[in-house]
Image (cartoon, rainbow, N blue to C red):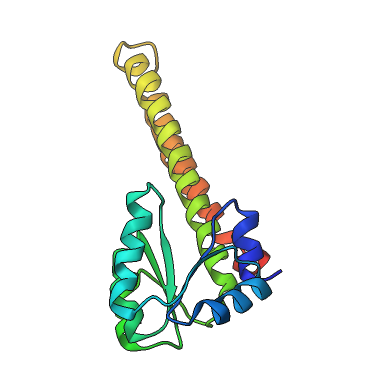
Length: 173
């Protein structure tokens, strides 16, 4: 599927923010499946529109490629620059879509979510080990050699869990 369909399937709200007139914007939006349109937005007003969405409590990701997009890319919670875009846009963005394929936005979000999930898992296991293992060892209920081995196992398990992210396939979106 296309980029918009993939983002919607992830439960995200997709907006079109463009300087084009409403009629052109609606035609393009209809073709790609976007319902939310802000048309006729001047380049200097794009960042303000992004800020409006943020004030509504939305986490805003912005995709852009031109000099006019740079302030909005910097204002968004996360800015995606198309790798074939201008240097100014690329500099203002947080993530660069090297191939210029907008489907990579969904892949980047999936990878980010998987990374956060992995971090939470690792913190959970480290917390469990530290709240159970250390007191048990400190109170003498565990042989010091076994306690050291358990600590090493805890560290290795965190690293192995993190390495699972290497199998993440960007193209499997």
